[in-house]
Length: 137
Image (cartoon, rainbow, N blue to C red; front, side):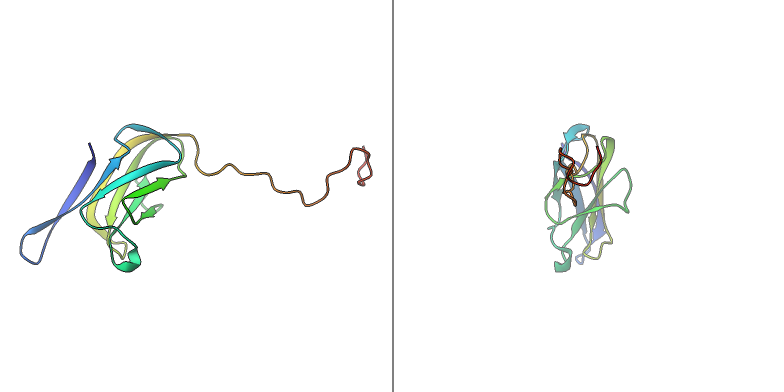
């Protein structure tokens, strides 16, 4: 079952037009491992904000200032802290103002985000075992 909250607004014909955004997956209370995919259902087409289409802000735990812009119905989350969180979706107008539809789902994230760091390449030659690299053994 998808979680969804919507907002009504008047349209030009005097009726109401239901704005809606929902998390299709992961399901509420899911356990996910990084990276994981979020599938979104929206009552309006999503796309590049420069095109004038709506988009979604995805963020965690009510931290709406630290969001990922989603311009399609799927997005991969590659970085997030491990533990219990609330995933939030907020449907946005092209100018980033709230379009009036939001939703959230609780989930638990395992692991850590991002790619493990690699060792930097040495900038100097490593000392040789014979001691001829200028190092004292």
